[in-house]
Image 1 (spheres, one colour):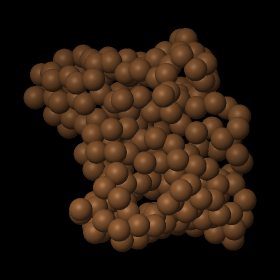
Image 2 (image 1 turned 45 degrees about the vertical axis):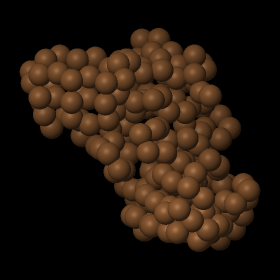
Image 3 (image 1 turned 120 degrees about the vertical axis):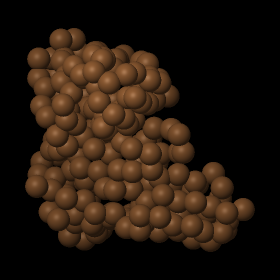
Image 4 (image 1 turned 90 degrees about the horizontal axis):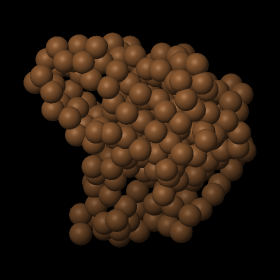
Length: 112
Length: 113
């Protein structure tokens, strides 16, 4: 079955440093989504990438979808304490109506 | 804010009890999901539904069961709770078209003694 691997599992940064989490799929994806879960909260949708090589930005967050549509990354520039949480990628295989498979998540800690 | 609700938010119960975790959404979404998540860990899909009278088991084997008699309601039942069922249970829903982003409920934190 489809597997989505995400690294690193944990990342500790000083406030102001950059942060990147990577997501790799065992199969070609039709699209990939990113979610953020604050400590004690529930996952919240951030963005969806559909096109090969797509890059999208949300303020300090930059999302990329690989050319082969098998990997993705989330980069945060100049982290802030509000960025603390777990970031999950979730890949959809096969058709655009296929099941979503979540990665293991990256837990981000930001030290002030 | 998404209109998806879960009750109870917290539940502490003894071994062997039957429990039902409630999940309701007012967005008219056909797709609904149940995930199990231990603190700081990944999301495991345990059940999903693509519409009324449709239910499927997810990637993680679970002793729980679900039903989908109404579009807005997707309850999860454990016939006999055990300490190994202690976890957080998250319900989610999504549209069938478009982004199909999943909207998550606040979760139920279950502790089985």
